[in-house]
Amino acid sequence: MSRVHGMHPKETTRQLSLAVKDGLIVETLTVGCKGSKAGIEQEGYWLPGDEIDWETENHDWYCFECHLPGEVLICDLCFRVYHSKCLSDEFRLRDSSSHWQCPVCRSIKKKNTSKQEMSTYLRFIVSRMKERAIDLNKKGKDNKHPMYRRLVHSAVDVPTIQEKVNEGKYRSYEEFKADAQLLLHNTVIFYGADSEQADIARMLYKDTCHELDELQLCKNCFYLSNARPDNWFCYPCIPNHELVWAKMKGFGFWPAKVMQKEDNQVDVRFFGHHHQRAWIPSENIQDITVNIHRLHVKRSMGWKKACDELELHQRFLREGRFWKSKNEDRKEVNCSLYGGLKVTQEPRAKKGRRNQSVEPKKEEPEPETEAVSSSQEIPTMPQPIEKVSVSTQTKKLSASSPRMLQSEHPDLQRRVCQNMCHDKYTKVFNDFKDRMKSDHKRETERVVREALEKVMMAFEAVNKAVANMQGEMDKKCKQVKEKCKEEFVEEIRKLAAQHKQLISQTKKKQWCYNCEEEAIGQQEHWHAEHKRTCRRKDERRIPPLLFLLLLLL
Image (cartoon, rainbow, N blue to C red):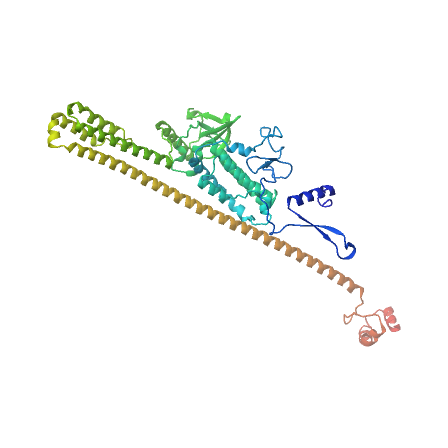
């Protein structure tokens, strides 16, 4: 450890004892039985296997902020622990004897909105998380590893988060964010801070925090930008966004909504096809009421479409037309339905009392008042209904001859009232049926659109995986080619060296000029092969001095 990692032997011993104490390493004492170690106790260390039954601990071992071990503060309400240096002054422990709650537990106590509304928003964020989790699951899921349960205190993954969202178990957005941070925490602990899995988990947590920030910035914009109904950018938000002319560098002034302001910068979202976001300096912002001729804009097709969208947004503002979700529509339909039923029941009771009275002339104003009020209290009917005229006609009959109405037709008013109620019920239920059909159609279109988007995302993921595999194959082929090229060059170099050595050895030998074979300067070789043939053929060519030397040999 000291030679490779630069750790002092005393520190190594201390860390080893702590690992044994935590159960990460098992220590054994054995007695030697052979050689010089016979009868001497020896310490041995080994990693525990699957047969070890880990005890469930109350708290985590690693800081929830930096994911490192050390002396930590333990939360009284949850399993999370923190280093004192990793906490801000607001959350640090004031008194060692007092109880302490972690930042997550303090933030979870704040309730943001209703569970149903919060689950609707969180489903969009979970769908984004699942796209990132595809790459995370690709890298391996080792929660079945024998050491996983020992190192990771509370296991969590994206399917678990999605299940909790669907069941409405989250009480606040901070609790959802804490689970996303727990996913990053477990990944860093098990795979390491510098691993590829940890990088993917960091990106996943960063995207989740960004989505939550966008949700807190404007819930209407967040919902509409994810649901994407027709003309979704034209619907006003609550509260309304400021409308401005914004100018990016290299472009002209463009209509936009102000999302937020920070120092000298303004975060805007432009009208148009793509609805892009950008931080614009405040000096490049003009109010929407400024005359367009003073801005000197280039009226392109995209700019004209953006202005058309701006005009539609302003028209929605003037009309007070806001987007209503499916749940709000159903609530409105139920209220109108119950209101209509209540109104239709009241005249029936009052008319029954009128039939029992002896002086019907005193009761004459009641049918008219009841009929008019019942028709006015139904908000879902676009036009006046015929039953108002029917009730008025009833009034005239009773005013002309009340005794004749009671004697000759005692059940006429009852039948008229029943017809009125039947018409009311029919109209209300038809309206409700039409609304349900439109909701069903819109929901079907939305489901089909989401299914198509999911298929497209899966197709893109497959294409991306194929592209990655193709890139890896190309990389491997390139490496193999380079390796073969290096081996070929090395082989050529060796052959060149051998050839050079062979040439050098050849130059050192003696060769017969006549037969071009090696001619060793020895008697046996000369007398056996070359004496008779080579000397007679080369007498005319050999210099005299060399000829005499050969004769002497």
